[in-house]
Image (cartoon, rainbow, N blue to C red; front, side, top):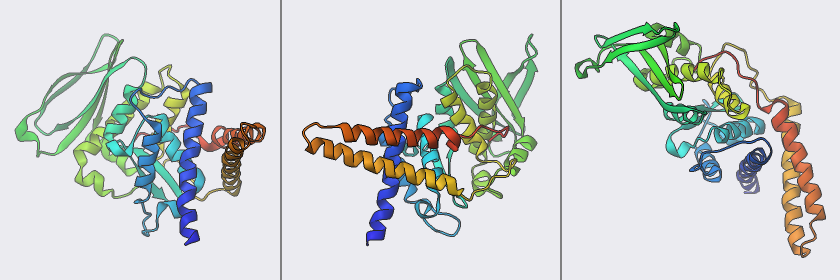
Length: 309
């Protein structure tokens, strides 16, 4: 019984750590979350969702995944202002690594947070639809004509395109079905039934992620937001071999962070009982802050690679 209680408490502490870290970023690194986004509610929804997630052997994700990967997934979700309660993201287990991935709705929400973005949309093109592309005077690709027809909805998908409208103009990204299939073949989930059963939604997500990456890499937005968006996109791909076994140093780092967080909580409680004497609480808070800096700033947020989603 005690083991079950311990397993339930540890992930809860991890969500508290993420929330504390997000608050630090808001204070020190100019992190700005959407006005209607409640990070605490999103983390609680994620924790409830994580209790349902299992690996391919039907083992609970919270038991098999490393603490570092859980923390990183929750942090990436929060930095992008996403919530599983709105079907904007979901969690997948790879070996002992947990990863957060965006849905189409999540990618739309994340890209809309970038400065100057007015509208984000993606559409699929079916066989016999009226679709024409071209180029403007700056040799930029544009969609000149798109006329979908109801009777073509059940036809084969021949491609997809995404549009990101900003204060300065409209950016288009176009992918043929062959390019979409090639992108899917590089994902870490081979023979993905979701791609087969929900091909329209997944095709839109794929082309929008490519459009978002091209747009983000030329933007001046915060590295925290753009890094999280790109990193989430790159997580799905096999183009770089990833060791999903947690390194011992990383495990020790997370354990140290958890220990510091526990001391901080105990010190806060003790400070209250000592009628406001908060010196010990301050020392513990500094200790957990140092641990957070070590974990989140030295390897937890990885650089994005060149993959599309």
